[in-house]
Length: 133
Figure 1 (tube, rainbow, N blue to C red):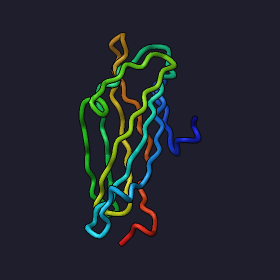
Figure 2 (cartoon, helix red, strand yellow; figure 1 turned 180 degrees about the vertical axis):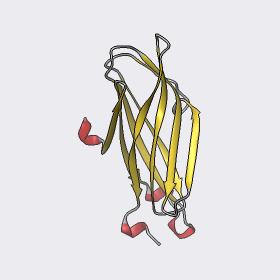
Figure 3 (cartoon, rainbow, N blue to C red; figure 1 turned 30 degrees about the horizontal axis):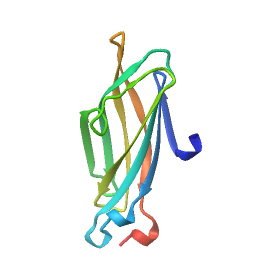
């Protein structure tokens, strides 16, 4: 399973795995638009259930522009992960440059009320040489 994901971070018993793919069919390189899909797997390796409540993304493009994205849950969900359970989702990221990166964290709450952040590992977004202008 781990070989499907290029990047991983573990914090507070939560493992976040990420794999990103450039999508040429969603990109318009001649117009300066590149698009990636990313697959995230969130695993609860702890001993208590935890609910994912929020997300915080830091997206940086090759020109150094930084976008901060904050919101509730992931793709419209706030999954409750029991020990040993995982949650997968796929989303996307557009950039105005052929390279960039993403990183961030998820805000969680355990059933005992404890609130914590689980790191989303840094991962690069890189278009192939054939998709550069």
